[in-house]
Length: 202
Image (cartoon, rainbow, N blue to C red; front, side, top):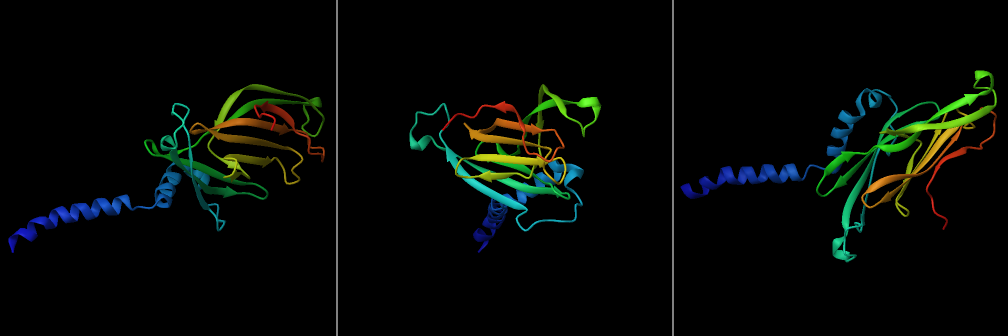
């Protein structure tokens, strides 16, 4: 009669470990999002129905022999942060087997816009890339699971004639910036200037 009682602490520990392992990815992601998003993602009021989305896919690492058994599985998570009159922002997180769940940063060119007479309503005289930066929030973005591509389109005003847009492709375990355009003119036309282009012709 005593022997089964000896197993109770072990069973309790096992049950606790099992419950911890069963904690959903969504709960983990929301907890990390609350920390990583900071004040920017707090108190916006509006929350869309699809404020949490995830996609699981696999890829062959560059170091692999090419065998299907070498495929690595990852899960991409997108979480809503905030919205304004015409923009909505999201943060992304990536779950890897050995790295766990981590926030993603997205490379972008840092640029300087020169307007005629220093008036942003005037003509754009030049857009100069002055370096690179990284953002943890993407505006008006979506993920295409067929091409493993994330695209964003940030409106500088509601009309959308002034904007910036980027494309990031999942390659060998990470998202790489392959295309970035800026339309800095408030002229009613959508004619962005390409600042980054690593896209290959299909």
